[in-house]
Image (tube, rainbow, N blue to C red; front, side, top):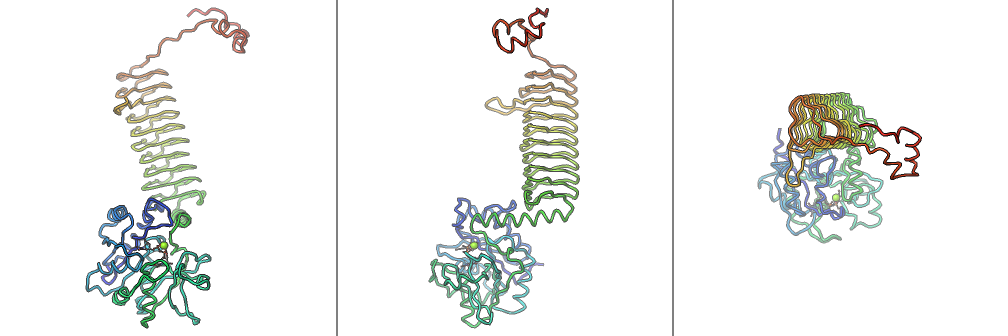
Length: 481
Ligand code: UD1
Ligand code: MG
């Protein structure tokens, strides 16, 4: 049920300078979703009456990603005044005037924090009746974070930013996770008192905490059970560390759900992927986007699938596929390239060094070796000979090739589209099919072979080839054609 007394503010306006990227930090992908998307998904799970996201840097890109993924989020534009304090000040001003509940502030760059941990944090905050609560963590390497300064008795005192900290304060291992719960009234009061007098010339949200303490209010710093839960992403090293951590959780989740994963370290699975039990994932495999794998399938080794569907008991080895559908019992690979629009029927085959695009290949049909099949429809139980090409592009437009059912095309065929090949057709090796082949016909258009006898002895005399021909004897004897 929606919590009418809860507002969540997601801070997403910062520049993310340390990423050194033209893509806004908030939109860097993590397990297939933008960093900020993970935070908004957590906010949504808490079912707050108000969810607000503060944006500024690359506003249009960030705002449209948020609107697309999380409609209903209130976007708040930060002005030219910098800092997390200013961001929260503007978000609080965008709340309904009478709102007097709790305000949960989430850093848009802390993506692993889960809703259960936050619900517990919020429950504790509400239970103690503190004016504010701060999530903290103890890190071996706390550099870059604000530090939690406690009194000798261990009571929370204030937060000091790394850039403003003394050497002694920098040695403190307990850090501010950037996640806070505030009573709305206390927060409103102290936001009005923030200044920009600090090393970065920004309004620090962390100063609200110090101001509340100075005003005699109770503030609690609550250490999180697992420090990685609140790891922030500020640079690309932290991005890859966080990605690895999240991936390990995802992989383990699938293993516990009955999926065999040979090598978690080299298997990458996006959050939105779905895998049934008794699937086997071999090493070096990436399953991305909305990929779905049905039971009994074996995927990998060394396979990347983006937005693909793999049917029951299918086998997909050393393959790169995007937006492809692989039928039940079908086999793909090794070294196959499945481009968007590939649909392989049940028990079909796309074999070694085959590229497909926009190709519907019917049940039991096979393209086993060294071929390009693009903009094509193939019926059921047909076999496309090794080294076949659909010549689908005339330099201006793409055209379709239609191949019927129970067709056997010879090796090294070229199908010059648009062209149709009827049911039950055979084509000879090396045939260039330029016009329709009616059902049941054999299509051949290769010129008759001509043997020019004795050519090697005459024009390549003294070579190893000529000698071999000599030894073979009959090479020099005229053969009647
Ligand atoms: C902040 C905290 C620090 C804490 C760390 C945890 C402050 C002053 N410091 O530092 O104590 O240890 O998070 O990860 O709060 N943002 C805005 N508007 C701004 C500036 C930032 O919306 O003007 C957003 C950013 O997009 C980001 C979040 O606020 O999502 C934190 O900003 P960032 O610059 O990463 O702060 P840190 O230096 O990490
Ligand atoms: Mg940060």
